[in-house]
Amino acid sequence: MSNAAMLEIRDLEAWYGESHVLHGVSLDIHPGEVVTLLGRNGAGKTSTLRSMMGLVGRRSGSIKFEGRETIALRSDLIARAGIAYCPEERGIFASLDVTENLMLPPVIAPGGLGLDEIYTLFPNLKERARSPGTKLSGGEQQMLAIARILRTGARLLLLDEPSEGLAPVIVQQIGAMIREIKQRGFTVLLVEQNFRFAQTVADRHYVMEHGRVVDMVPNEQLASSLDRLHEYLGV
Amino acid sequence: MIENLLFELEMAAPQVILGLVNGAFYALLSLGLAIIFGMLNVINFAHGAQFMMGAFVAWMLLAWAGIPYWGALVLAPLIVGAFGVVIERTMIARLYKLDHLYGLLLTFGLALIIEGVFRNAFGASGLPYAPPAAFNALNVDIAIMFLPGYRVWVVIASLLVCLATWLVIEKTKIGAYLRAATERPELVQAFGINVPRMMTLTYGAGVALAAFAGVLAAPIYSVNPAMGANFIITVFAVVVIGGMGSIMGSVVTGFGLGLIEGLARVVYPEASATVVFVIMAIVLLTRPAGLFGRG
Image (cartoon, rainbow over all chains, first blue to last red; front, side):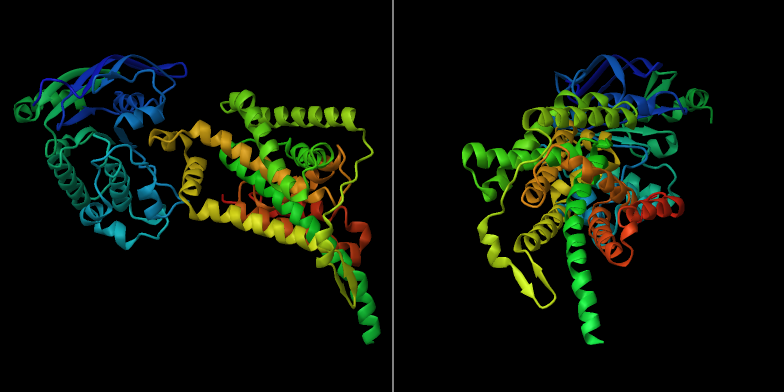
């Protein structure tokens, strides 16, 4: 692990209109890591990702990506800096077919996966190329939502609950896919409620509560920290 | 018997053609409205005024700069479109976070101001704008009627522009951005696309379509400040019937209603002015999203 963090968040606060959703989030991610944000519903996990992308009403604090401050940037410029976002509801466009959905995010830097590689990783997407995006199954839509951000050359991927609502066998596929993209050098910040899934893919886990990061558990210490985690997550 | 039929055809054909020509304008205007509404969520009440501006700019180009019809057909939409870009940047862009109603009120106010300015400057009586003589070669003189070539051109030009617009939106990358941004602008922007700039250009393009229709209309109707206001009420009915924001719906409904109006003038002339609104009422009651509307 290199010393310089790829992403450095300090004292991040965020608001949706009047409601204050993040109360000082701080965390670091190093290049090539897979890191999760764990926590109950409403702990601020999704809001942290949305704040990083500039999708909340107002935010303060510091988000440094590769040494560059992004807290005041517009969301298209944040994307162009090299961060790609896969939202919880997947964001597949109904009026676009599968290929159009896949090709939608513009390539922002060299180093993304080529179409051939994407079709090797996700053969279904090739078979269904002309179907409207939202006619795919939930699992296929999730694959499509992740596949399209692998193309762009973004180095940091933000994945919001990719396992949510999917059958166990599909969740295993998603897990295998995340390990595969880690192998290829992508850095991933993953929001999860399901820490059994999270521990199969991640290097470290941040735990969030009430809009703050309250703990950090390296994956190798997960087994010995189960009691603590159960308390945080209320499972 | 046959003479009788010929006589009836002679009566009906001009009305049907007139209906098609009107339909060509309905289609172009409602297409621009649909594109603007889809992307910006703004009901562009200034559309009729921008149509009128297209006709006036064509007239000015000819009278003041000696630029003929074909030049105006390209330049006037660019000039009026650029005016639209300025309006969007300076005014409409401030209203996106508010209710639809504010955009409607703003553009309605703009329409009144623009029409007032033109009435002050040019009077209300209208200015002549002759179609290029080249169109006389297109004149059709068949057994049942005389068909001015210029009107044939209007229908063809409208169809071509509608088709080209549809192709751009449905088959190109830019169109894919537009469709995606119509669904979820926030997410498209988070993929690295400058959505505010896209909205500005979309408004400019919609306004340019209105101005293009205005240039087409200049040789048919006298160029006058109220020419847009006369059209726009029917065009809004067309948009409601076709389904707000549907591209194909605007085009098909535009031509279809023009034809229906024309036929009504033959069958029951008293209804020709109201038939579109009767259809609108029926569609609103049975399919509130419009014939081609989603959801």
